[in-house]
Amino acid sequence: MKKFFYFVLAAYATCLGIIGCSKNTSAPIISFGGNAADATEALVDVGGSKEVLVTIKADAKLKEVRYFKKRVNGEEVPSKSITKFSNPKKFESTITLRDITSDVVLVVEAVDRKNRTTTAEFSVKTGYQSAAQTNIRLGFNMLNTLGSSYSVSQGKALLLAEAKQAQQDVDFMFFYGKKNGVTVTAPSSSLVTRVFNNSSYGVQTWSNRNETRLVKVNLDYEAASAEDIANALSGATTSVVNHMSNGDTVAFQTASGKIGLIKVFNIGPNSASSLNINVRTI
Image 1 (cartoon, rainbow, N blue to C red):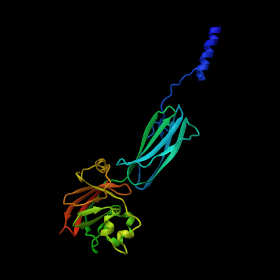
Image 2: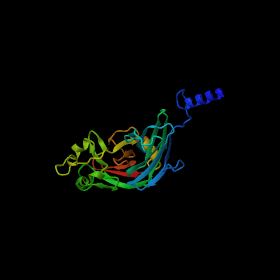
Image 3: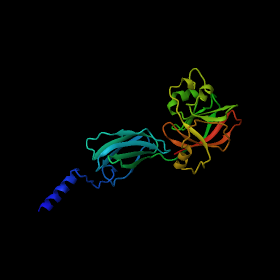
Image 4: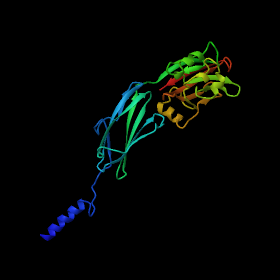
């Protein structure tokens, strides 16, 4: 009888942590929509929003939850961190993704008090389909009859005065110079303040100058996928492509996150007069 009493007492002490015992707990489990079997992606209209319900269960209690957005080109938006929980064993939060102009991925990471990390992703795809804008003619610098500025969202070239009015939509500009040759550049580039200088509507008077990324690539204009373009843009920080020639292809990503390709099919009748391009967005 005494042996049985000491066995029970020892077991009780162990479970209280006096001698020390461990539970077989699993790493945190992340689910979306409150159901572990819920879909991990959604489709929204361009410019729309998506509310994502995140549920995390942690037997060993949560130490930290981190989440961030990742764009189609791999660029990460700065993450947010949560370290205080009303219920450290079960965390629920609705994360709202707003103004979605291109595909994004919500990445959620959960760390428990045993420093085990679980990561899950929720993809939000836009309903935007590949679109082509063909036979676009851009004029040299500040011609009054042919625009040098181009808006992807409007799908047209703009004269400089028009461009100032629609500056939030201007994605790239064309000019020719002896040093740079045939050039396509983002409005954010310092080059355009010298080239498109006008006291009334020159770029130096704009309050918004979009930072479009531009890089010359060796991709098939017609067949390149969104992934191909994103990979070509990965790590690129350039906003100017110069010394362009007929047949060149340029990958771009607008300030709003839209990606695509520019194809040069005609320069002339001389290098300083006009540039004919096709633009394909994805």
